[in-house]
Length: 377
Ligand SMILES: Cc1ncc(COP(=O)(O)O)c(C=O)c1O
Image 1 (cartoon, rainbow, N blue to C red):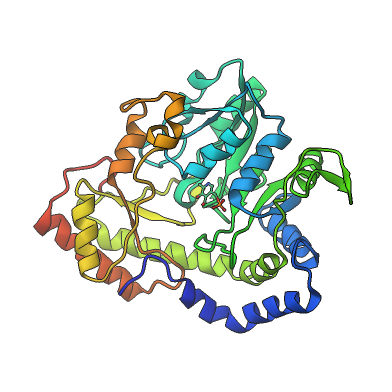
Image 2 (cartoon, rainbow, N blue to C red):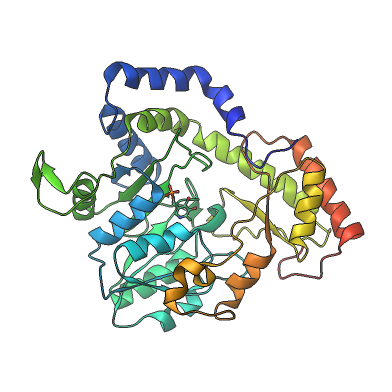
């Protein structure tokens, strides 16, 4: 069996340190926030080349609070992509602002900056580029357009810990950057966790209050806030894991390079890593017109795969009220039909990559030859 992700393999590799970190919290009883969370905030902000880190309970809360700190609320519009995990759009919805979509670039699965300006209105307040699958969006044109229109940029880096854009780490480029530490992420907690990083002390101060009931100091609530605090155990475990993140990221990149090489010439469309990017391969997604058949056949050989994501957000029933219909964002809709995520985790071996690639090459030639797709190799 080749799993899609193997959280157990990673735990086994750090067991003594992870167990000690958890025991430390049991000993100190700093179950929520506390010194481990504080230290992790400083370490992860520094890793992400930002000044401030504010630990919260999920990546969704990170996005929600970043939007609130930017002053986003009812009557405002926030631009993002429809080809993302639903949480990006839910966070906008929580603020009562209206999500406005821009299609993706079909090569990179990230916001098409050439389509951005046409979506800006006098109600637009912020832009959320999503660094989907671990590859940063093309940030320079997005930042330039945002600056010209006086818009806040909040990066959804929930899949992009340690990714780089033109040599800069994701985290220090825009107004605020949001991360998820959901267990399956490149840096995953043992439960739920998230963080906003920023260079702006005012945004940091506001988010720090909002995550803790809007309190400036104990029982002095100056804002209507939330209970979005990060747990002590998550901070302690994430500190242990952060020390390995670079090694794990390089292992992912090596596995991705294996897949690239093994699938070259097969006609299968493999991910396109842009020259400006350090892609951290949270997801390695190929494209196929025969996804269900391929998924079933792979599973028959003991190979798990995933689909991220089968329906773009503008076509989800939950967001029908936005009034979009089929055909509005063709690149997102096409990607949602074709993407297939292969097993990807730091402990994936070269032999496992070979087994997956062998199975795929067989499918591509024998079962259902894929018509040429945009980035087929
Ligand atoms: C792109 C993206 N945005 C937002 C989120 C939300 O993060 P969380 O699950 O920690 O709330 C996730 C992960 O689940 C994600 O992949």
